[in-house]
Length: 112
Image (tube, rainbow, N blue to C red; front, side, top):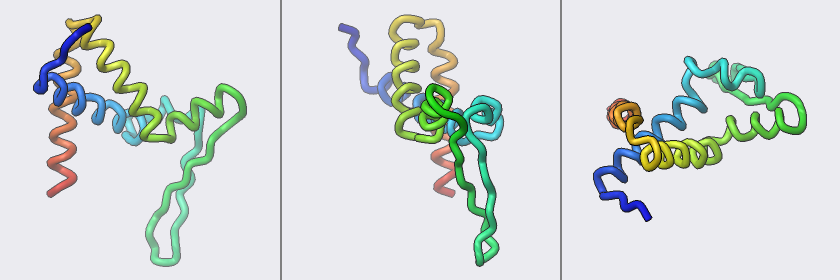
């Protein structure tokens, strides 16, 4: 069994967090989500814009749309990919580290 020290665990956790956010929320990856869901923007009575997700299709297409609209679901698969990459493809560690640093930056930005 592979052992992971605390430092690497934190790096993997931050990378998984950022990768999940990247896929589920970031505009740059909207092309991944677009075939599976529509984003509907509505203005409420206070003038705030609210975003609603409408899942497209049925079967596999619907299932992928539900997966991509769920932070927890996508997070599981991103975490699995990050951990398996760390264990079986050690040359991917620099990419994992970049996602971890971006995750820290996102957390700092959200607290300011």
